[in-house]
Length: 250
Image 1: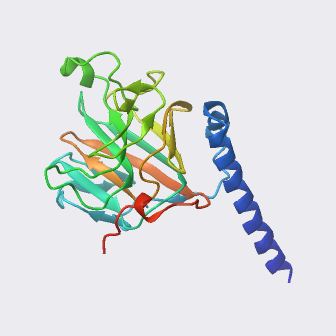
Image 2: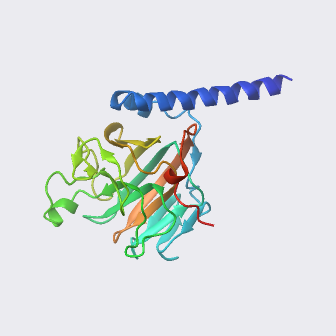
């Protein structure tokens, strides 16, 4: 009887914590920053187990694209394409550490993504959370506004940027470390709204995403990138229409 009471209390506490996380997101960046400082006790589960690719499905890359070594997921970047989660996610908090191994490297995590690429492009329709190495902009003669941590819809997806640079939302601060150094992203995605923390501070967001549920994808885009400590906490579901859910891939 006592064990049953403890389990019930634990489940109720877990639901309360998830609701508090969603409320903090709706409070804006200030509330989200409080969330970023206190996630260790929350109900996260590994999205990458550090041992193999269980839970992931290669969409259009190759066996040589993704390797696991010493708890790290190594992406060669070639060919360009994605690997996706084996199921869809709606509202969640995603944590991931990443580092580029080449100057000017480009990659990202796709959320609320379709499970198959477009006919004319190797990438999927999604919201991209970009991971850009610091030398990318000077190598491509891009403006200073073109920085890491941009959020944007891909392949015809629609969303409203908090900090507009065209259809993209740009980070308000440059917080990423360069080649060979680990960075940490915290992505909070709730009811079509996304907030992004870069190395401990929320600096970007978008809202009114056309899609509110889909797959999570890791992108290979030409340069070697490493991932580790990828974990996710699912939040309560919302009111989502069939049109706001990515097609299920069987």
